[in-house]
Image: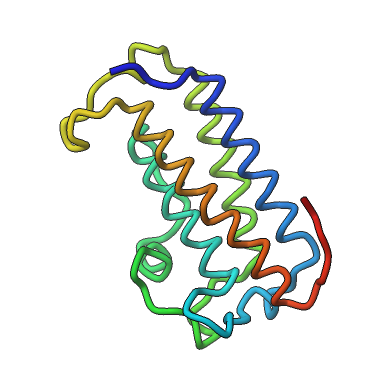
Length: 161
C-alpha cells in the first residue's frame, strides 16, 4: 500500500502546528478551560486530545509519547469534559508538549525511508504506516479547527486565519 510522500506528512504536521499556535496565541489557562454552551469540550481538552493523537503517532514510530499515562487518560477519546481546573494540565505545558511532539515527529519521519512508511501494519488492518500517520494528521486537523470557535468563546472576537 502506498503512503503519502514524507514531504506531505511533514508539511501537514507543520501546518497543523501553525494553526494550533495561532489559535492559542494570547489564550490564558483560565480561558482554555471555558466550556462551550453546547455539547463539546474546552480548548484545554481539545489540545490535550490532539496530544493523545500525537502520542499514538510517536508510539507507532517506536518513540515515547509526551503525555503521562494519567494525562493520556484525561484527554483520551470519550473522556469527560474538564469541569474542575484541578483535572487539567496547565495550558503552557500542553503547548510546549505540542511543539515538542511536532518537532519529534518531523525528525522521525525525515529519518525514515519510504519502504518503512509503506510497510503494512497488521494491527491497523494492513494499512501502511504512512496512511496511519496521514489519518492521524486528518484527525488532528479536525480538532485544530475546533480551536477557532473555542477561541471566540474566550472573548477574543478576532480572526487569526
